[in-house]
Image (tube, rainbow, N blue to C red; front, side, top):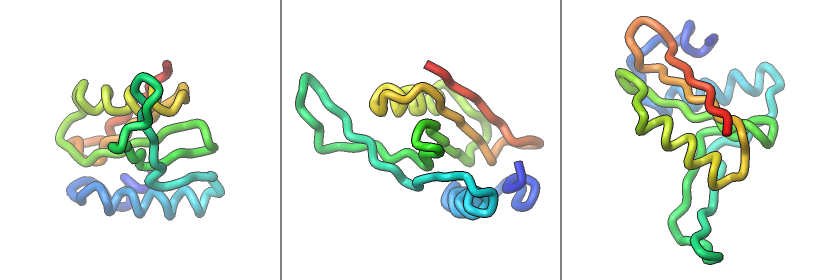
Length: 108
């Protein structure tokens, strides 16, 4: 919420990513930015990979967006990240929504 209160809406996603990394550091939240996730298919590791915005506490995926409204496309992206990583909790934040920070918690 602090990042949203300070920056508001209208910036591109990389600005929010960097600001959120600063906020995580200031609050002592362990995180890894741009964590690579490998995808396997029938035992084969694929060349194409996913990169999650943040992995916090080694078990929570945090994905951020700067779009007008979250849709099932963004939710599906986080669900796919959870499937590939074998993690259970994902947080999706949208800094582009008019009037408020839009957020969604996904648990599998």
